[in-house]
Length: 149
Image (cartoon, rainbow, N blue to C red; front, side, top):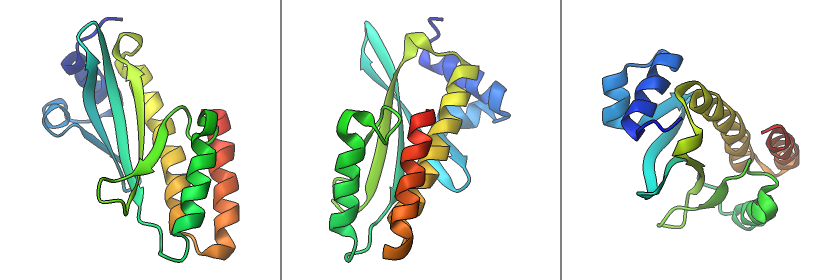
């Protein structure tokens, strides 16, 4: 496919009904209140696109539980759709990032991948925000969605 990063974002805008100049300037897509940040990354001979979202801040009471679930989900990418869950540099918010090879993407494919990223991201947002009673249900939903990714 061999599109440049700017060409890829322009195609993404076209397939998603977004304003191309705004997308190129802001490099963020918002789906159901989840902001997904896009960034060019990688080496010149192997460029990549990184998707990243801030999923929320676990309550102090559930912080250890959320971290444990994140570690399990990261293991062989079982609950992350191939991405990685982590903590923000301040250590208080959960983030999720996914790296995609630029050479494998076109606008339509990136739009579909972002839609899946948003769907799984929303499941994690629900899990992180849930109280203890709802946490197990949200966790199971997140893992189920990852299996479809």
